[in-house]
Image (tube, rainbow, N blue to C red):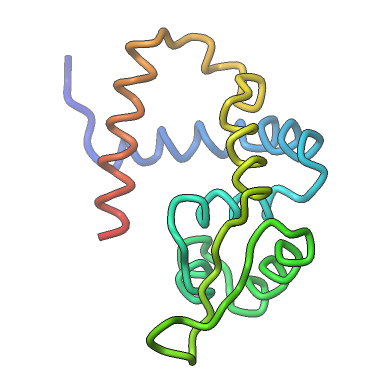
Length: 141
């Protein structure tokens, strides 16, 4: 078997996600009663507390859009926003217990993922998870 290039893998992965994103988004939107953009932010904050500028960078959006999302999440009681402990110019966003419950419930729901994931058995999902973790860590370093 020919080993695919990194570029081929990137295009295949990108196409797969983009082609099936709306299916997953609509399932998640209806489950949590808020836009998917809010869930994306909440999921990032669930991994670790982030400054608003770090959150914007990770989501690939600008500062004003990030403020709108964070304000909405604060209003819903899903995150808190506090001054950075060592640099008061920054705000740190932290998930609340209510926010974590939403993230955990979506992640635990097998119907939130596109149907194509039913083609993977437990070992394949475990292997894919390991590969994606490696890529995510490389992207964030």
